[in-house]
Structures are given as C-alpha cells and as structure tokens.
Amino acid sequence: MDSSNKTEVIFNFPPFVRVYKDGFIERIHKTEFIPPSFDPSTGVSSKDVIINQETGLSARLYLPKLEKDLLDKLPLLIYIHGGGFCIESAFSPLYHSYLNSLVAEANVVALSVEYRRAPEHFLPIAYDDSWASLQWVTSQSNEEEWLKNYVDFDKVFLAGDSAGANIAHNVVVRAGCEDLNGMKINGLVLVHPLFIGIEPIGAEVTNLNHIRAGKLWSFVCPTSTGADDPFINPDKDPNLSRLGCKRVLVCVAERDQLRDRGWFYYEKLRESGWDGVVEFTEAKGEKHVFHLTNPTSENAADLMKLVVSFLHN
Figure 1 (cartoon, one colour):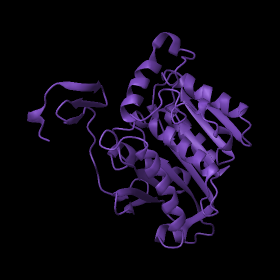
Figure 2 (cartoon, helix red, strand yellow):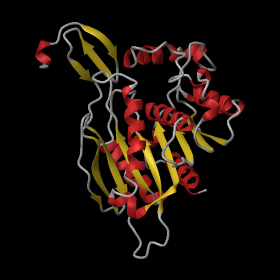
Figure 3 (tube, rainbow, N blue to C red):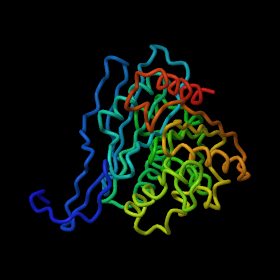
C-alpha cells in the first residue's frame, strides 16, 4: 500500500515498526538487502538457498576459506538474526558482515535463516520457519553440495541474538521433544536473549522494560497468552528441562535492559533438571547487541573469541 494513504497510527514501537489503520506498515529501522558474495577480506563465500518453495522461506549459506587438504569436516552453525521479530534480515549488511566474520574466525559452515517477520507474518511463524530450516538441514545432508561435502553432522550448533536468541532457544526445546532424523544439536549460543515475564525482576522493577517488551510481544504474537507465554518466558515452559542439547552459552551486556532476563534464564535452566552444562558471560559497560553495532571494539572481539571457543570445545 502506498504511504500516501497512511491514516492514523494504531501501533507505534520505535525504532522498530509503525502500523497505520489502513494497513500500511512502516519499518522505522530500514533494512537494506544485499546479495550473497565472496568476501575478499575473510575468504568466506555465501549463497542463498530456498528452504520451502511454497512459503518462500530461504536462508544464506556460508562457507569458510578451505585448506587445500581438508582432513576433517567442519561444524555447522545455524544462526537466527534478531530485530524484535519484525525488522532486520539474514540478508542485511549488518548480519551478512557479522556472519562473514564469525564463519572465518570459527572455521564453520553457517546457515543464516531468513524467517518471515511480523506483522505480515505473526508469530509463531518465525518459530515454525526456523524449525523448518533445521529439518531442511537434515533432509539435505546428502544433497546440498556445501552440506554434503564440508559439514560434520555430529557438530551442529544453533545461535542467535536478541529475538533470534529467543527463537533459537525455542527451536532447541522443540528439538528435545521431537525427532530430527537422528541429528543431535551439540550446543546453543544465546546473545542478549529477548525474554520477558509478567513479574518484573532485577532492574525491571524500576526501568519498566518488561512492560515495553510486553507491548511488542503482544503485537508480534497476538494469539499469545501474554508475557508468561512459554515462548517468551522460558521459566513457564514445562519442557525447559528437555532442552535438546548438552551445552549452552548465555551472553549478556551490563547496560542492556534485557541483562537480568539473561541471568534469570541461566539460573532457571540450571535449576530445571536439564542434563547439560550452561555457561554465562557478561560484557561490562556494553549495551544491547554491541557486537553488531561496534564489531571492532575490544569487547566485541572478546565475545567473538568466546563464541568461537564454545563452538570448538
């Protein structure tokens, strides 16, 4: 719909999205889309793949620079981007650049999921798209060239930041409850995860961030039961202890308003009866997704080292 037909605003959530009564959707944070490429600075190659022809679900595959004699196949990292479930993209310059760097540093193959976003596609579609991408990996293990030739399917990881970390967590919970044709997930990396709850915790008592985040959640998931929905509050999920991996890395930033929820998740996972090991790390003095907005900083480099170490431990 042409923006000239805009009328009154019915939902306003800067810097993410604004929705008008006539149905026009304005993404306040504009997202540019760039094609896959060979990145000369890292030696990483990328290409786009279609996960589901009917829905248009797609993803971007990344392949690191390969040694002439590749003796061992490489871990696979399935990455889910953030953006409040409604902005950003696996194909944006921000995430394309980050995945190039991460793939080069960690020497892994990566699949960055282009899930469908709200409000055109309300949740739980993003969860289902990400699950479908994981299933696609299992179905293509002997078909897709880069997967077949270079991936060690005994070393599969999921990771995401912000809303993408939320999605990654929920996908791995589902993997603990449903079969993946024998494929196992080794670990889960959650960077500044987007979780909330009805009852405020920590700094939420004074900054009221949980109320603002709850407003966004109600918009992107209109069928939700609210801020204690297990999708957004893992503490209320009876399947938390069935998380389908044995290792988790939770990363928070000291000045991030979601910081206390990350710590809360770490504590609740430890107490849940889940049979695995969870690690916690905090970047002092940093804000939400600082590693994306300031990737050359010392703290961003330290976070990259932690993630790389986790993927190869």
